[in-house]
Every structure is written in structure tokens, then in C-alpha cells.
Length: 303
Image (cartoon, rainbow, N blue to C red; front, top):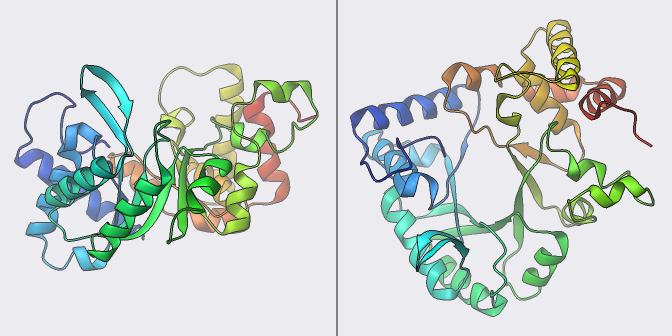
């Protein structure tokens, strides 16, 4: 989302293409091979600068995987934001993304947001056509509940393989919904209960956007007393494990058995590099350390 320059109408230039190339190289340097896009990011410029890098880096496309999203419309038809998963919109937006990315296919297409006016049969028809044409290889969703995925899956001929949700040590409703059943505190949890379990049961990968909590615990902005406790624990664990707080933060997510894959949203090259040890941290983290971070972030014990 951070590639391509401003969100306004200004076009991108050589500096933005060079930035995209550096980000891709840095990510690949720590073993990241899947790159996440959406048709709306920077008004399409995020995809476009990435496509420019693919053109000038022969053979790169075959070495990586690409995913993009469709379903959100910004500033169109007299509306600031609305959702559109109609057959025509899916076909139009995916074809536009492919042109900007300068590739013949995406490895994974995500439906970006639930559309209340969605006809699942139309979605199935559009996705089937795109797959038959070789333009989309797999399908996923974003910001959907287990019930919404199940409804959609009943009408699809291809499995939903991923669900991208906001998940982090800061955004914990996905986790707290699992332990606050039959507790009054659970009424304040917005995450749709059962979604985690549905995805785990069906083998659907959970992709966590906002996984670094927008730098909340790793150097961005003023800290609350609860934040200070988290930062202190992250720094202590990082020192003990000879790694970085970023790696511990992501490792905490990856420790969960729900196949959580953090989406690293930063374009800061040093922060990308700081995430390198996340999988190792997840493998080493003890149950006490995992729960300790959760309790520190909550500022209290769980019920």
C-alpha cells in the first residue's frame, strides 16, 4: 500500500519505481516471496510501480507470487466509498490490475470487503471465467467472517484458500473472542466468533494485515503505560533471543496454530530486515512468553 507515491492524482516517477525495486529486493532478501496488492492502493499506482519493476527485472515474475484485491470503490458514482462484487466489477477491476502489474495472471485474488448487494452466483461466474482464462489461479477473501465465507463457498467451484484480517498484538479481538465466551466483556469484542475456528477447520490461511501495529510498539509515537509494558517485554525477549522486537511481534502471531501469515506493510527497508527472524522466534517462543505478551497488551489478566 505504501508504494507509488501520494494518494492524490500526481503520477509516479523514477524515484517511486526505484523505491518499489528496493522494497522488493529487501523483502526477498529475508525470504518473502508473496506480495500483496489491491486495486485501490494509491489509486492504482502501487500496482503500477510494481509492474514497472517486473518489466525491468527479467525473470522476477517467475520467482515471486502476486496477490491483489478487488471490491472497494473510492470516490466513484457520487459516493466516497462503496463495495462492488458484481460480476462486471470483478472482471473489470482484475483486468485493470493485470494491466498495471504488467503480468498475465495473479496467483491469488482476494475479494476485498463483503458487499451487501453481492450475488454469490455472480461472483462464482466471474471467478470461474478469470480462472478459465488463466488470469487468476486461486481465490481468497478479506475482512470476511466464517459464515460469509461458508455462504460464498457453497456457490464456488474453487476453494477459498485465504482470509486477510487485521490481526496483531494491538488488534486482538480475533484472539479475545475465543476466551470471552460467556463473559460480559465479550460483548465489546467486535470479531465475529467462530471465524478463526472455521478457517482453521477448512485449512484457510489467515493473513494478518496491520501485523506490526503501525509501529506502535517499535518506535512510533507516544506510549501509554500498557504500551510501555509491551515494549519492555518485546525488548527483553528480543535481547534474549538475539533478534529484534519486530521479529518477536510477528513471531507471537505466527506461534498461534491458525496458520497466521503476517503481512509486512512497511516500506522502510530497515524495518523489513528487522522481521527476518519471525519464523524462528515463533518456533522458540514458550507458552509463558506468548501469554505474557498477551497479558501485557491487555493491561490485565484474562478471565
